[in-house]
Image (tube, rainbow, N blue to C red; front, side, top):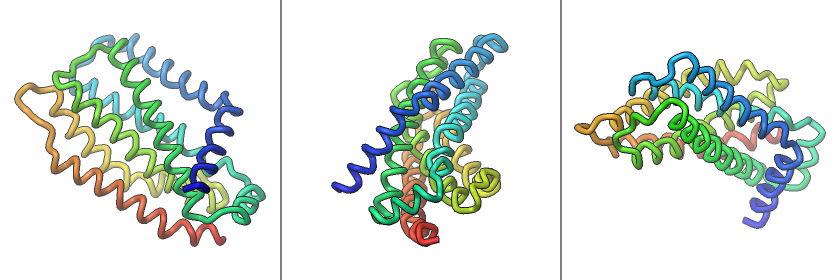
Length: 215
């Protein structure tokens, strides 16, 4: 836990020193939502829901992809001499999850301010947004780790990520669509399935990343 805490502090310190990345994400969110506001103003609930998750997907790609791709080979070799692969990976996953929790909250706030608030069950939707942000960050963190070892080929993220992320997005949109109707309720079985998928991704990452770490 001590090593994990130090590695997480390292990620926070690097992010604070590279504030252009954080403000770039904020600019991306604000610009995208302003364009949507100018184009469609107050969309229907189903459209609002779809736009929100698509927007969150691209936010996650921009926020998480750099986590491993920005690490040079020399820096990775330096970390290899200092810590274990599992500690390094878990610190990355935790930091990216925290970052996506923040970005998801900001995105939801701006969506409701600019595009209206069609939610009839706000609390379950907010919970799904936070859980969805974590889910997306875990998937793309794992894919970024693989892409970073493949000559930093970001295209691999798109190739590998498409069959993984689409079922997750469909599940998130179906779950969240129930919060826009007074007659429907969120399926907790599906929520448990989503949590199980997140757990599976973490386990796969912990098992496979040490082999990439030794490369």
